[in-house]
Length: 372
Image (cartoon, rainbow, N blue to C red; front, side):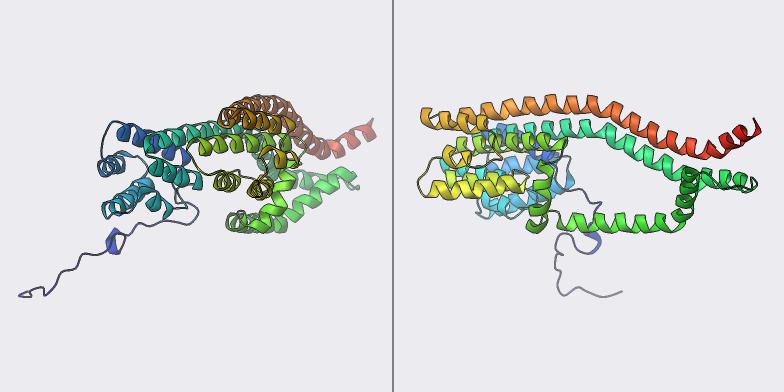
């Protein structure tokens, strides 16, 4: 067209046609497994003598997680301009947990970055295994519960109206259980959409507020007091606390800072609040085990082993032993829970579905009795 450009300016990443479209609630972030693999690979490459920039380049190119690859490129650019890797990780606090950032900072300061990354990888790998154990234990009961709810809804919407039409010609009052079932079927026209709206609204609200302190203060203590799942959740929290605390001490992170970070990563507000009180006592010159003993959330065995570890100068070793013990306890508890839940859920489905079938056939039984 005979037009010459006066100036050319490169557009920023993620703008214009290069913008990535993400749907809220469906965009996948950086997973713990991705971080574990990245930490392990990064430790191996740094330990082999590769420069930090080259290591970050390789990791950004070979990782299968697109969000992590994007972050690693930004970290590489920051490191290239003179920023420390821990400071750059700190800019992505939503994707890198506090324990990872602080252990990397300790590794940088102490000159053992590869060792710190090895500890992070081992920690995350055990955490992934723990989550997998819990998820596998909960998959079956959740599926059975969903199937039961779907079966109940289908019967109320499609099956019960057919039987109701049959019962209209009987000319007599329906038995109370059958009448209740028919009334529930009629109300499903209004209750069903209302329930869907309530569930969707609660899910959106929960996703936005579940990490707020007000909600955690209310929900987390209830979790630990649940009849069946409470003890299991307590063991998970103690295992996570012990493992993270051991790794932080091994990485050379100061005790007070380690207690704060371990509390934040424990996953339960009760543990976090207890460790805030423990940190305050330690700041005043007390040992770790004495204030821990005053917190009922920590079992006596944990506090006694920590006390022995402090006296013997082997706190990290003792914490690792506690973590291993509670990992085994969680494994055994989830297996027992799965074995116990299976017959309970089958019995639940039998009672619900069987009860509905019996209620539907009660008028027919009444007619048969009257004919005899």
